[in-house]
Image (spheres, rainbow, N blue to C red):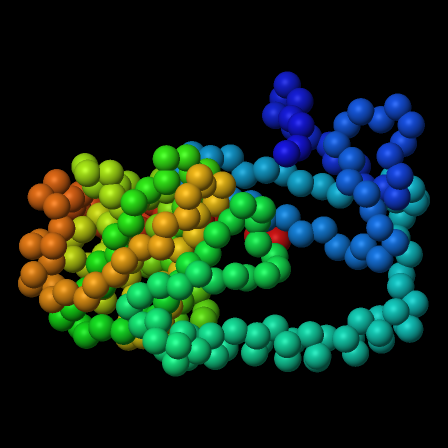
Length: 262
């Protein structure tokens, strides 16, 4: 973990060797290192403050001259294969989950790269009718830094969670009175606060994550008729009115639009 000063700031030094007498945070900068990946995790979007981040190369002059034509050409020629790789990387992911039999049930997903330390993924395809809902139920780890559930479409694009109620994290979805977390995935608003909106996508993927948790339970899921939803949920399940839902979505959109875009 990075050391914060009294103002809540941190400085991180990346260099081939630790400078003599340097006591701050230091990461070894290997000869083949070409990038630094950072991920910001936020739960309460309306009140949490976004960090300000800057990178300074102290070993070179601050000016940056125009790059040579050869450098620009090399970078431009590298674009097509990179785009081809990224655009097709997970396009068949949903279909593979279906072929493996993980429809309306979950399996562990080992990302293998780009994940946060201590992050655990699980996922499964969803497929149910307009008059049905998928009820997801799980115990909640006693210690957990972050948790979330999101939806994707059939080609593994994240469902628009700026303008729809299509993602839920630990600040947005509370457990029921018995301590168990229940999420309802449905094509229309069932009035349950912990609702994931498919936003018009009849099929797709439900992906969950536990980050920094002392356990990683795999939830169970079952398809029920919307008319029978109240029968399978506890009596104290949190509910919202149509007006309250509109206010929730408007506030999540406002908070998200104010987040930094890199």
